[in-house]
Image (cartoon, rainbow, N blue to C red):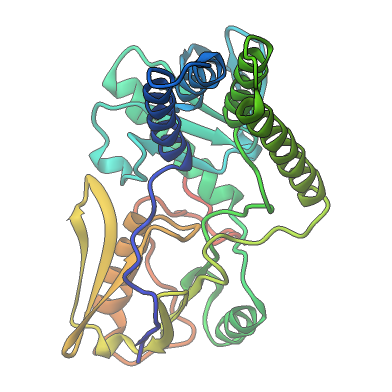
Length: 347
């Protein structure tokens, strides 16, 4: 039976850059207010102007729409001529959500090619839908589950008991390395530093400005050093050792919020919340308790929803036959393939 771990109800925090923008804007207002009540106001005005400009620079403005064309290997950005191969595609979202391709409508489409997260321009909804379908087909083809030792052993054991295309696994959704701040955060801190120096130049007793400037220089150096060191450190997922294994025998889950396993006969129902067009939570209904899976796995919630429904309908009441493969959802292959995640071609 799945068991709840502590800290399972923590909500995801808002973007750090948005919080930084608010703090910088509030600090600018406070500094301007102080400048009105003191005789030597130049240093406060200088730092305040620096904070105001930094707030504008730090805000995560909507990225520019990118025109593109298709190539043999992937897509080519029209402005820069940069070619992004399909093999580097790791994520694709509509308005920030990983949506079932069946329900794709209007909305901004972001494709993540590793180091490049871009918002693409499309002429019509059909073109956007076709690209989104193709993108997820490719993502499934590229997918290699990242599992810790425990789940890797469970996956190996299940593969020995069941056909390859009836056993699925997923690790955490992404990997992060130490401290990594967006460039706009560095630029915002630099603007505050410049404002502090400007205030110090025009002030008779620039103690406050000098303290702010020196503090920010030290902070910039420290963040830059940590970011550099992080390049040589082993990546660690921001969701810990989250992962899952699905097989005809059982469903094994591991995360900060949940851990354990269940048999398909224990599952009473499954649904996506709030809806299939905006999946945020996958709810598993067990006897006397609901278990919520968040969007934190390599496999998206809509895909897990299809798989769990399929396995429950097939194995909740019927005996497991080792040589019988599980029929695949529509995004899965119709031909034999060593990669269980590889989707059909949509050419």
